[in-house]
Amino acid sequence: MKNLLLLPAFIVCHLAVAQEKSAAFVIPPDANGGKTIIAKAEPPRPLKVVIYSGPGAPQSGVDNVVNVLKPFPQVSVTVAKPESFATLTNATCDVVVFPGGSGSGQSKGLGEAGLKNVREFVKQGGGYVGICAGAYLACSNFDWGLGILNAGTVSSKWRRGQAMLELECTGEAMPVLGEVNGLFKVRYNNGPILKPWTRTDIPPYTTLSVFKTETAKYGSPEGVQINAPAHAIAPFGKGRVFVSSPHPENTPGLEFMIPRGIFWAAGDKKEASLP
Image (cartoon, rainbow, N blue to C red; front, top):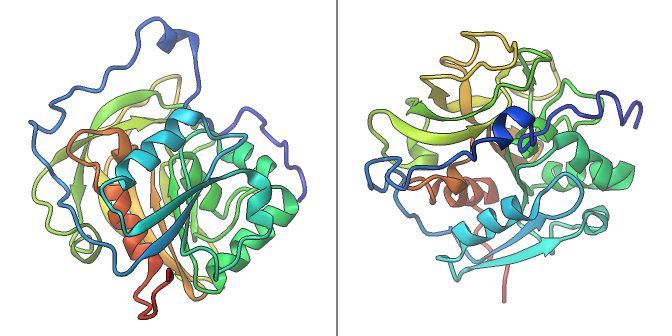
């Protein structure tokens, strides 16, 4: 993989910056008025989910994904070190999840063998869910990325800050997220601002929700986040990719969004994955 360390500080969703250390970012407990915005859904079958844990993935981000999957006993969750992804197969896993942190850091942790095998896993029918850093990792405009999503980012000035932002679902969201009406709030922390990329060998993505407000600190461009995708899906080979720029897994009322993304990414195979 060429230029793996290009822009080494790039793509850090949980960057600890001096300006934001002085006042901890607090997620309001009633961020969505105490309402459950994304309704619970059941997995299509027993599922095996593997969550990346290693360089580029702070433990808090891993724990957040584990916690939102606890209400689903049909889902077997494994937290795996980077080297495990070099031998991952479609027989041993249904969906991989790459949480928040650093996309380039996760790429470095995976190494050539891990990156190649994750691509092949999805291509052969596996599911991929990327949150913030994991969404960056899926993109096609970085030479260290997986290139499983036909998307790039609108600006190299990725450091936009953290905020509670408003989202709105598109007409394409219902089959994945269920019925979601009106605006709702989500925790955002330097996630990617996506735009269509130039690949001709893979299909375009479908936008499930868009940002209706934005944060644009530290000289990042203003206006580009409004109506940009917050959640998107796409096929890759026989597999499915679900990405989330913000952090619904750490936002009250949205705890079931990532599980729904995982269930969609798993596909509609009829055979059970577990005995």
